[in-house]
Amino acid sequence: MKSIAVLGAGKMGEALLSGLVKSGHPTDQLCFTERHQDRAAEVTERLGVRQVDVADAAGVADVLVVAVKPQDIEPLLAVLKSTIRPGALVVSICAGLPTALYEQRLPEHTAVIRVMPNTPMLIGEAMSAISPGRYATEEQLVEVTSMLGAVGRVVRVPEAQQDNVTALSGSGPAYFFYFVEAMIEAGVLLGMSRQLASELIVQSALGAARMLSETGDHPAVLREAVTSPAGTTAMALRELERHRTRAAITDALEAARNRSIELGRINGV
Image 1: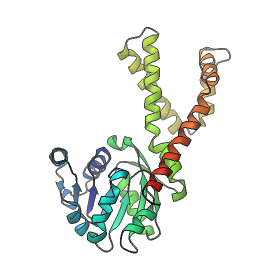
Image 2: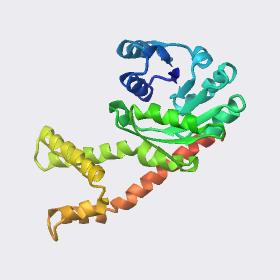
Image 3: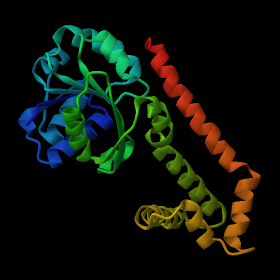
């Protein structure tokens, strides 16, 4: 069993550790780093995984999962450069940071795999996209797919698509939360209690998602099945079109994609 160190125990880092523990990965083959001691103590108490410092993790782990914020990457790479164990695999779940950044800062031929997960990792329902760097092998890709499979679904994409993935599925849950929030507020405005509006909308969202997943039908087909001529749904959709909702969604995703590209440039790649 490979030893895995998660560098940064924020929400995503802890979610990955939790998924690995639940999947049966031995806790003595897991460790994590965390700057804030209160947070580290919470993670250890919940999961039974030990905290270490970055240098110790780099010296022993087979797989190093980098889960820090993009703006914190340079100090981390400075430590890893002199402490990473030869042959270790680096898995980056940092938004916007390309494999080339790690390959430039770390020892030559370090294998790197870039991953864009999303926050449903917290409940084992993540959508993660993975891309290999120059030196990552097929065997390592299989290993990372298995590791991330403990917290959701995994697909492979060319790294050139990762900024698009970040905009679409990486940030995607926030868009759904935003839309559901707006629908709940509309329900309250129409005279419902917030509790009832929430129950109605959340279950509708769950049911719609399952229909998309299980039927395999195009969203337009499912939408048309609900939309009677001159009916209530048709009137609602007309208003969404009048407010250029589709165009706004496209603009939003382009803005997220551009920010992901910018994060890579800020860090010198």
